[in-house]
Each structure stands twice: as structure tokens, then as C-alpha cells.
Length: 172
Image: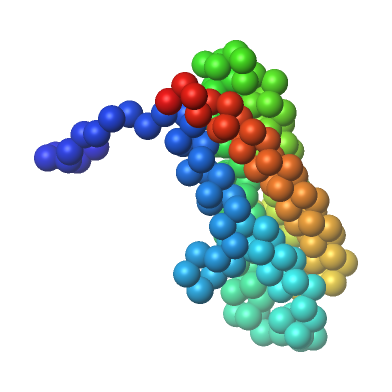
């Protein structure tokens, strides 16, 4: 809150979930891929050997690593918070508890997969070893498999969130 900021009505759970769902399912954000398209672009970029040429200069590898760490961090952190929110929503709305907890478990698993992606490069550090590890095709193929799995979890979680939002709509 800022000084002089107008205060409006508190946003309800149904609207919060609908807003989150819009983000999860939006395929374009300006000029950038969003939602499921973002997972596909991320995966394809990692598998594009032209982006990781043999004897690539270290600055190029650091650029790729920075993008990878940013994507992993967004997924790991964002899905972890989504899980926490849905667990709280399950407590507040016992009639929607089961689907909330199911979606929360999917988001939590997705967060764990993102952390596993980072482990494949040697951790979240921005070091030379992590950059060189990311250049290895087998590391990128492992990460790409985890991205595909994450995309599937995200899609399933979004479907459940839509169901929960519809169930909470009459309670607005």
C-alpha cells in the first residue's frame, strides 16, 4: 500500500483464481510466448544445437544460463506460491478442498521439477561450471524432458483451477 492509494474491495478467491487462470492459459504476452506456448519455446530453445555451438564463448553460455535460471526460478517460485494459495483456499472453502489440494499437489510437483532442472546444471549459481554444463546436449535433453513434464502438470493444474473457480463463482 502506498500513501494516498485508493482502497477498493478485497478481491475474492474466485476472481483471484480466474486471474491466475488467465495468466496460465494466455499464449501470448505482447511479443512473447506465454502459458503452454512458453514451455514449448523454452524446450525448443534448449534443444536447438545452433544456440550452443561447439567451443561457444563463455559470455554466450552465460547468456543462455541466465535465461535458463530465470525461467526455472519463475516456474519454481510461482508454482510453489500457487500451491500455498490453493492449500489456503482449500481450508477456507471445504466444499472445494479436494480439487484445490489436487491442483496444489500438481503445482508443488512442478516446482520440484523446476528445481531438478537447476540441479542438472549444477545448481542455481551463475558460475562457469553451470554455464558449461548447460552447453552439454545430455544436460539440455534432461532439462527438456522435465520442461515437457512440467507443461503437462501445468495444463492439468489449470484445468482443475478452472473447475474450482467455477465452483466458487456463486460465492462471490
